[in-house]
Structures are given as C-alpha cells and as structure tokens.
Length: 530
Ligand code: NGO
Image (cartoon, rainbow, N blue to C red; front, side, top):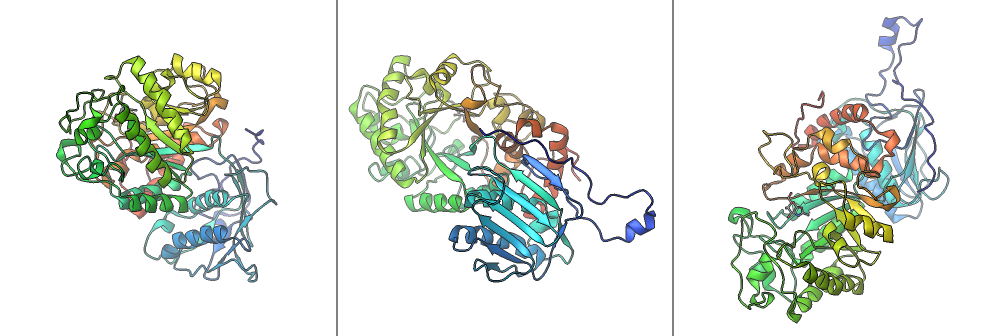
C-alpha cells in the first residue's frame, strides 16, 4: 500500500459567523451548504475544505465526461439519473468536450493526485466540480462522495424547489483494502433478483465493491446447473426455504443479468457453492451424492454441520467439477467461493482429501478460490483466500496459512455478521456470535484483529448477512443498515481517519437519506438521528 499523505486541512464549518460582522448581516447572507466536505461515509483519506469555493447546481448544469470514454459517459449518466428527480434539472451528459459552461466534469487519466485504481480526486470550486480518476471505477467512487455532499433531499423521487449546494474544497481518496464485500444468503430464504438489485444500489453508495452470493446450503439450491437440472427444480423447488418457504432459484439468465447490473455499479459478484458440508439440498435431490445411494430427506430447519458429500465416491468429484465449471463460465469476476465451513460430518482426513481435489478445480476453470476459514486446515495454495468468520482472535491454521503467504478476508462473526441481533429486543436475526450494536460493528481494526494476520495479509473485509430469519427486502435492510456502512468505512478509510464520534455523527445524517429512498433501517439508540 502506498505511503499516505497527511491531512491537508482541518474540518471547519463553512458558514462561519466571523467576529465583527453583525449577526443580522450574517443571517441575510446567502445560506451556506447544508453539508460539510467531511460528511461522507466512508470517511475520505484527505479533505481540504474551502468555504469560498462552494458550487451550486443549477438548471444549466451539464455533466461533462471524458472525451471518447463510453464508460465515463455511463458513470455520468448514472449521476444524472441520481440527481434529476429531486433537482428537476435536465443535467445533460456530454462527452464531446465541446460544450463548456458550468458543470460537473468526470475525467479519466492522470492530472490529479496518485489515487490508484479505485481512488479519485474531487475538486469543488465556484466554477464547477471535477472528479478525476485513473479508472471508471474511481470515477464512480467519486460520484458516490459527491452525491453524499448534496442535501438529503437529493435522494427523493419528487422534485424540490431549493438550492443544491456542494461544499467547496478538495478530497483526495483511495481505499485501504482493495476488497470490500457484502454477502447475501439466498439458500435459507430465496431473495428475488429485484431485491438483490436494490441491495446492490444501496451498498454501492458506501463503496462496497463485491457482492458474495451464498447460492447453496442444506435447505435450498439457488443457481441453475444444466448438467444437474434437478438441483433447482427439486433442490430449489417448493418448500425449500427455512420453515418451508420457497421455491426460488436464479436461472442462468437471471444470474447473468444480476452480474451485469452489479457491474454497472462497479460491484463484482462472488458466487459461493458450499461444500463438502451444507449440502443437504443437493443430497436430497440426487441419491448418488450419498455414500449409501439413498437420498436424504429435505430439511428446512436451521441446524448446521450434519451433511457431507461422499468423499470416497467419484460421483462427488464429477458433481463438484460440473458445478464449478458451470458457475465459473457464468461468472466474469475472478473469484469463486467453495464454502468449506462447518463440515462436522466429514472427518478431518476426508476434508483434506476433498479440498486437495476440489481447490485445483477452481483454478482449472480460471478462478481464484475463496473458502470459509476452515479451508486453512487443508494444504492451501497461496492463491486461496480464507474468509475468517470465527469469533476468536487466534486461529493457528489461518496464522500458518498467512505465514506461508495467503491473504485473508476478515468477517469476524461478532463484528461483521449483519444477521446478529442489535440487542435483545431485535425481532429478527440470531445471536450465537453475540449482540452487535452499531458501535461494536465499528470499533475494531482488521489490521490487528487476528493474531498473526497483519495489515498486509488482509485482502479485505466483508459483511455477511445470513437469511435464516430474513425473508423480505425490508428484513435485509433492517439488519444491514446502519451496520453495513460501519464495515464499509472499516474497509475503505485509513485507520487514522476514522473514529466513533465522527462516524456516529456522519451516520446520523444517513437517516434522512434512507428515509427519502424508502430504505428500512434500525434507529439505533447509539445514534443521534436528526
Ligand atoms: C455460520 C454458518 C452459517 C450460518 C451463520 C449464521 C458460517 C460461515 N457458517 O457462518 O451456515 O448461517 O453462521 O450466522
């Protein structure tokens, strides 16, 4: 990670009441912007406010995008679509570099600070706003920052007649970790593509750039596999959700459409097929996946750790290869998650045998393997990324893998599991890893959380949301917000740029934005919601 620059400026209120100026005069001056340059989640790496440089959007504002770049133009179009409903402005997107006039410019290439592949520089001046980045992804991140610098009403879908002022100054920003993830569990309760898209739209605002989809488990199988067609018709059929809810699965076309949608928000889909445990749905569908050749009964309870593929059977490896091949072919992103958690019904020796055969299949089909941290019990190639989910702060297998060069995704369950209850009274969720209030989710450092795993071995952070108790999008949102932004800030912001006081104030300001967008969220008593 490159050397961080020091903070350029201190955060100051933009509309200062200067000594010597009578209060009445101050009151009649043009109102300052509602937001301050620092009112952003995740906290930017560097902020230099300039109260003389506020920019006000107007009916003639144009969005200029990098000449000749279709990708920059599509980021411009996204921005226009976000801003048009509430402002009522036309906000034409112009990539011809011909029109000048006041505007927002989204520019690619050098010219700004060195912000890496995912970062951006945002300059707000009286004459206009410029976002510069090396990649369209960086521009998109800058656009999310810009969006949060406008008043909350900008998120509404009806037009307000008011001023739309962005606070002046410069932000130079890039992420601490390249991987910042969220996870949805489609297996316990299926979530419809439209619900997943809506979640994608919300998490993208906090610069989350990966969505991990847990596609198979004991209860249900949720992705079409042509070579094993009954996985979805039976394994994802009626009654396959927890407590018999269902059916539901993604066809290949629906999955590809989701991948493309996520890509338009610069989010990479990480598919997970959980093996060799958490496989009851497959084993109740296909008798040959069981050692005794008898299909197990389907199960819709929430027990874990009872199922195992048959390790000595060649059918198991044909199945694993077919599934990995088809999922890999459908997935443009570089990662494929093979689960590997809680295989309590598989002996340790069998577990290693299984992983020795299956991990290379992921590579054979061109993907980098992720697995829950139990995979570290196997002999791991250094390319494999264990995802740490335990509540302990010591794990010998993971520490050993890291010593050999593996990187880790940090998802400690007692900090990042969005399915844990906030407090005893939370109507949804589980509490096996403890109660997780917003501050618990925020106050930890992935760079020194797990013994033997330092900053440089952390590939990123991820917030899993398991769906044993969650059915609707409302349920998902209630558990994710406001903790998801806490994990997003941990993944993006430099450790020295974040602290609870500042975060809790910035988080409070997200409340009205969620209200405008109709997002359900938990009004944590730890936050002074406006
Ligand atoms: C565990 C378990 C999942 C549960 C989840 C509930 C992992 C990696 N395996 O996390 O099957 O759904 O807890 O919180």
